[in-house]
Image (cartoon, rainbow, N blue to C red; front, side):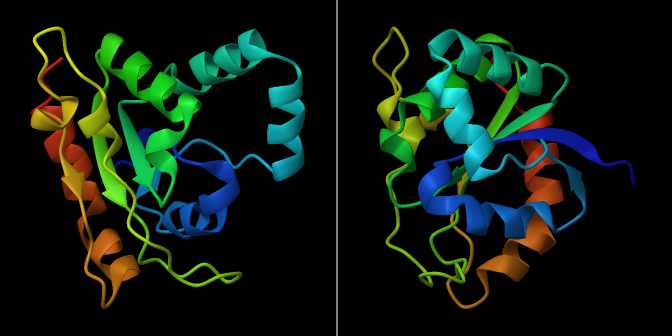
Length: 161
C-alpha cells in the first residue's frame, strides 16, 4: 500500500515528542521533522516566512492531521493551518494525543477540539464535518497505529470542502 502524504499540525513546544511517535508509525508519509532551533529561527524571521513555510510544506499533501494536545486549540498557527487546509480543499482530521507518553512528562490533559472553535458563515462549527478521534487511553499508540491509515482514507473520501 502506498504511503499517503500528510501534513501534521500541532503545538510544537508541548507535543513534539508525542508527534515524533506518530511519525515513526511508518504507514504514512508526513512532513519532515523540524528541530526546536529551526522552528524558533523560522518564527523570528516573521509571519510571512512562517506562512511561506506552511504553504510549501502543505503544497502536495493530501490530508492535514491536527494532532491535538492540551493547548493545541489555542495556537494561532494551528488555526491558520486548519483554515488554509480547508480553503485549499485538503482533507482534514484530528487525533487527540494526550494519552501518548512523552519521555519528559508522561501523558497530559485532554485538549479542546480545535475544530469546535472554527465556525462557518452559518455559525456551525467545523467539527460538524471534520472527524476527530480520541484513541484508547490504555494503549493510545497502538490504537493510532492500527487506525491512522483508515482514518486518513475516510477523511479523504468524505471531505466536505
